[in-house]
Image (cartoon, rainbow, N blue to C red; front, side, top):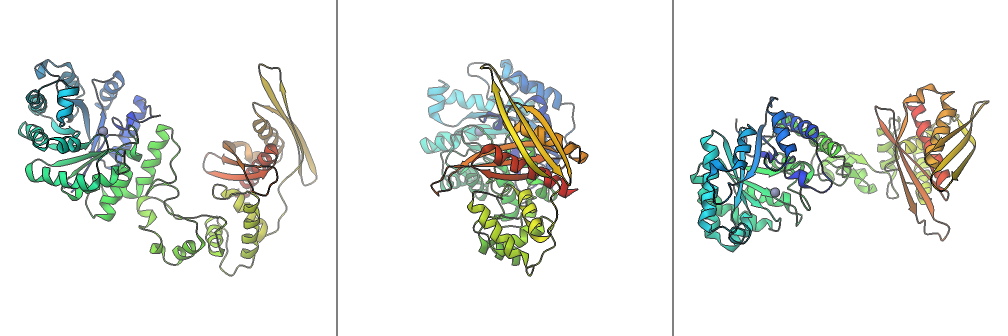
Length: 519
Ligand SMILES: [Zn+2]
């Protein structure tokens, strides 16, 4: 059954125009497979005429079978002053062998006369010829009406004539594009309604986020009758990006009750978003609506207390419906219930009556006052809770350490020695590294490996340093946040000191202590 709203993904074409994005052919194929598995209806793979990489993508994509999605190739209309069948751009489009063709054409007279240097009638002919050419070749044709809203504001009659030219030539969908991203939701709704009243063809919407309305404008168009939304995963795209499909999809499904992607796909939304970020080599944005790590994080003590009782008291949807998780953040503001929820999440058997909760909370506040932060250092928090709940001997103690740096001007080398005690045994090791933390990590790991061979697979994967102003007039402190991985899970630890080496050692030692606690 045809869904009420179809999703047309252009992550691989418009999205790849975004700053810092450079997809290889292999990247594009992996993303296309993922989008297909998710149930996206159309995947725009690129512009075959614009670069060899896009052509190569289509050559390879031809050989695979997509279960849900139809692949689309993108191009502008035929060039002026030449018959459509002689235009090499049009021929390259056919070579891509996609079932769907997307043709972008001019709506705004300013662009026709000043940019294209064509007459208004020639532009109409270019639109009609191009659409008809691909219809004659048996393609489904999506017509992207560039600068729809600017063009309509300027000359509504001419804008309408361009859409009608595409409709009469047989376009399957006419997509109203807010190419410059400068329109407001009210205008989008009004102009989409106008187009809906004049056209028989299904209408789509393509928006950009220049005013922060990429998603709002797409939704306004759907409310006014559009049945296809074009956008990108995570809102990638030129300038401030395209309409973000990771917001549009759950809004359509969960807020508007419109059928769109398969229902079973929705809980995989967060995974899809993170997957595309990983391929693009971006750190997922924690503040991204719906799928970000902070989207359902509760910091205020009152909020945390309330969500524990009635989940929807401070949440607009159930986080699991989009594959996200509720998180309760530990911070200055947190009360007993935050700590209780967090301790349970970390696997401790505690209840509201556990007497140690008070001690744990007091200890957290004390450390936060010193500059510690546990929101990204859950492993350090778990160790803290454990120390308060059950007294047990530390698996190891760092008795002494030394770090030195030698430089001969051209290059420098760091050397660290660490003395570690496990019960009554001592290990004393030395290691070199390209930086002091790297050297320290090497020496500590070597010393511990004698006692705990299971640490072999535990690796430091990220290291962040921040100078913090404690506001007490004393010397600035350094906070070090370390991410460690054993290949299956990742955890964060934190260290704070006036001395960066000492702060790093705290975080490093805790990362290994936590690895041992997990076993
Ligand atoms: Zn665009």
